[in-house]
Amino acid sequence: MKLLTILMLWRRGHASCSWPGRWWRKRGPRQRRCPGYRWVEVVLQWVGWARPLKGFMREKQFLQSQHFNCLLDSAVINQSVPIVLAVTTKDMQRVEGNTDLVLRYRGVAKAVLRNVEFYEHRKEERCARQFGTTNPNHPYIKQVMASGDWLVGGELEVLERITWSDGLDQYRLTPKELKQKFKELKADAVFAFQLRNPIHNGHALLMSDCKRQLT
Image (cartoon, rainbow, N blue to C red; front, top):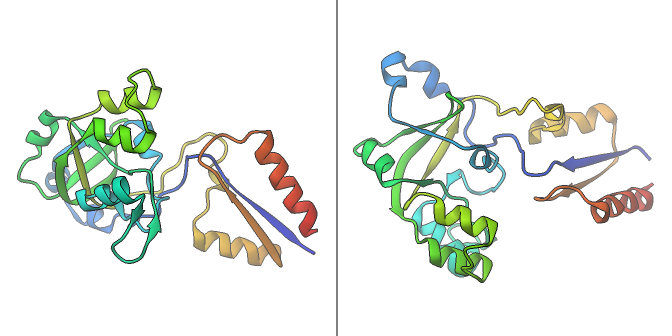
């Protein structure tokens, strides 16, 4: 049996939203100078993995996630973690009146957020529902409370493939590329292991044992 093991690497995925930015390439320099927002690395890492989301949550999706731990529009889909983009009041006022927002990381435009929707960032409620506590010493709660007072949602158009130059980009394949890889390897069995945290011994044991049972 030819077996292909697929390891979905911790957090740093590739972008699977609308891609690769045809709208951006058709615009001239003046249009490309539309209002922008500077991403931090942890926000960029969220891009593209939380299907069926097509970008950052709008208020309706955020409330569904908070109150029901699911998305409810097209079907009941587990989504207990809000995928949101926080901005300050100053940033919101700066882009007021614009429907699109260019998102930049280290000065490079990475995506366009379409038909943006701003809504209140209910930080304390978000923490209480997501973590079951509002303890300010919790590292992620501290990060949430220090973030902007507003959330902005919309659909993402990713302008280019997101890479990290960490020696692992070659393993971050799109679904289409994975299917082609399966054919090239003539794999008749595939197992996938997706995780959101760094790999530890328990994960390694699960993967090794799965391979042992399949072969």
